[in-house]
Image (cartoon, rainbow, N blue to C red; front, side, top):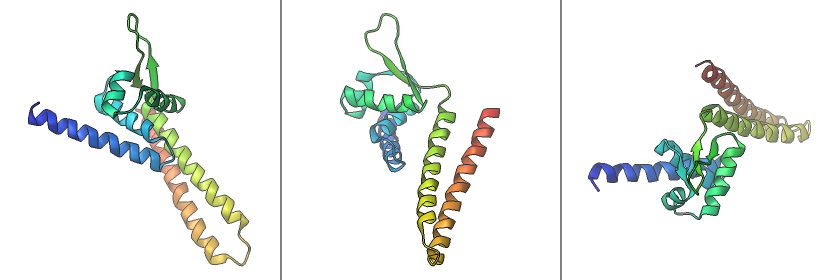
Length: 155
């Protein structure tokens, strides 16, 4: 393997792991995040066997991650004529689907803040103010994502 190929392989592994950690931090599946990262890096459909080998996970974990991504409109399963194995790839509409997923996560955070804020007693003014500022912050992020979605759909 050339040093360039080895460097690319190392970068791919790092990218895949980082996306797994990010997905998990956002309330998603780590393996789904890793699968997303692999498919994004490779830019092609891959069989469950290829994915399992690349991610060093079982095929059932590949299918579970793929189902998570499919549920959110980010990947799809392809059955090819003459092939025994299905392949998985990112959907052509992956960016809007990803934006929807991220936006939904921010909306969930806002609902959590709203629930706690509404339960605070009147005398918890400082606490209410602090939590409301955090809620406003997450609403601005959600609005920015909505704006990005509008821009993406016009392209």
